[in-house]
Image (tube, rainbow, N blue to C red):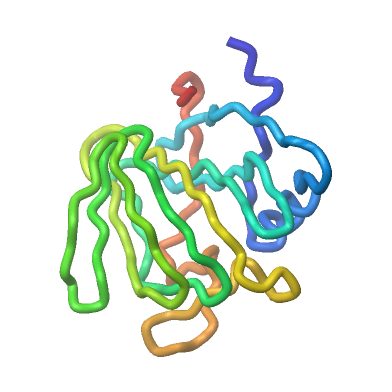
Length: 169
């Protein structure tokens, strides 16, 4: 398999925004292939395609990877599990396990967090629909309503270590 066309891993919110701007299509179709080098530790975000109000991101999490309770303030989005499974939690610790080819829709303002289950890496297809393109598409808040960077250590961000030979495609 040729991995030369695998999109860059966004290592910050700025890199994610820049990838969306670079890949945004306005007057033609945008094509993409879902492939990613899998992590042994940490997580990856790879912008696959975008328009002014839509973005497609392939997210990977090492076994046990997680994020902290948060909500997006300028985006409705959804996840589909492409590999592995995840447990999604709400603000009252209610939860639901989401397995292969299942998904969840998260309207703007809904608090959630999730944890990657099982021994294999979790792969999620994330599609986001921006509410107001003039505002930050990645804006998020924590459970106290404070701005919350998805790449912060408080969001369980750890250094990513990629597997040398394990790929999702």
